Every structure is written in C-alpha cells, then in structure tokens.
Length: 72
Image 1: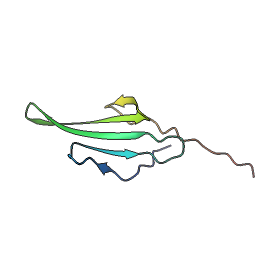
Image 2 (image 1 turned 30 degrees about the horizontal axis):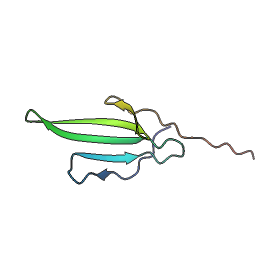
Image 3 (image 1 turned 90 degrees about the horizontal axis):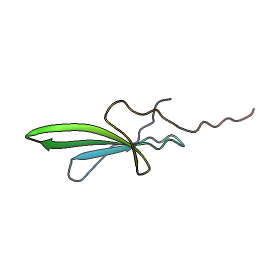
Image 4 (image 1 turned 180 degrees about the vertical axis):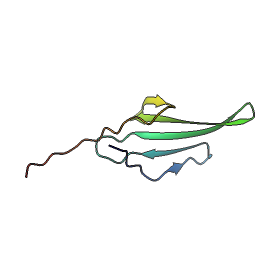
C-alpha cells in the first residue's frame, strides 16, 4: 500500500519541509532537509512515527495503515 501524503509544509527558514501520510494508522512523517555544509548544498530525508526517528535516508518506509474489514 502506498502512502497518501498531505500537502507539503515548508519551515519559515526554508531549510526543511514536512508531509504526513494521511492513511488511518500510518501517520508517518517525512521531513526533507536542505542545508549547506562546506559550501555545498546537502539534501536528505528523515521519517518519523510520532517523535521516533525510524529512518534517515534510503527508501521510504512502508505504509502501515490499518485496514478495516467490514462483513457484508
């Protein structure tokens, strides 16, 4: 299952942006960071659930939305 991302919200200083998976139960936060080090721009992403950092860089963690089954 793919994430359903919210609109991106940029920080006032322009050094990061964040978006949230809006699927029930997932709510992973993707923070995209932009900083300058030694005269060059660096970019990386971090993924959080709540306040816990679950990954820095690499591939997007899987969506862990809760699927609701309804008996017909």
